[in-house]
Image 1 (cartoon, rainbow, N blue to C red):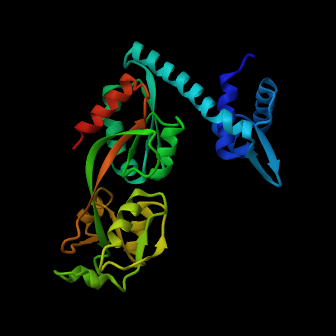
Image 2 (image 1 turned 180 degrees about the vertical axis):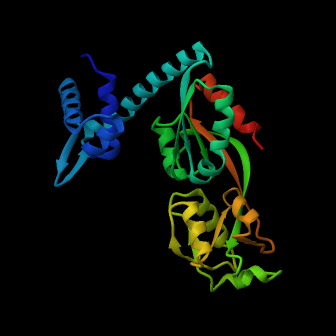
Image 3 (image 1 turned 90 degrees about the vertical axis):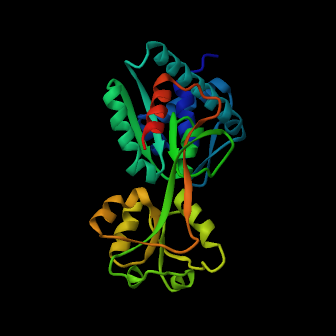
Length: 295
């Protein structure tokens, strides 16, 4: 049997999306080409890997058995490429960086700028999503490194402490609470809270603190990124907890205000993550070192 690694990559994309069009977009193939490669792989293995149930595509038992082995084969090939890049040094190569929304928008681009000035021939791709999706991307070998605001899933990931992030409660400058020097948790009971989407580490940390006694408010508006949250707060739709990294410009411009509540300090450790057991290339190590120097 002569198995094509590219066929395994296509198989993993289809196992992930369970949709031929979306799988084709990920691996840059047409839908018919995806079908051809899957059928070829099934012929080689003499087993059906997917089946149609109604309008849905699902993995067969054979497909579920193949998936972890295929992932290891593809990951090993990727690691070998990185090892060769390391042999060639930092004159060429690539890095795939995943970042959750807060570090991805407000911190990681600065690291990339510093890194590119030192290593201009290293190609970098940055993907931004919530923490859960970044961790899944690390596990599935879609990213070499991840920068996240928490740890939500699995034990297949190694983590390095990176930076401390403070989450603060923001309101528009004209909000009645913005003019008060002393605010108690009970003052928030009638406020509309705006939160991030499920899977966001910011949301997970805030929910942990909102479950404390005397902090009963529940979100009535859910938005998918911090920029949307800031705009909603400015428009008077509610108040929100956000990273201080996300509001530096607004605080300077005095377009948002921060409320201080006694004994409510919400801090979290931002993490650098990578797949457990992964061979880190010289470029990845250099990028980590650049990130850790940034203050």
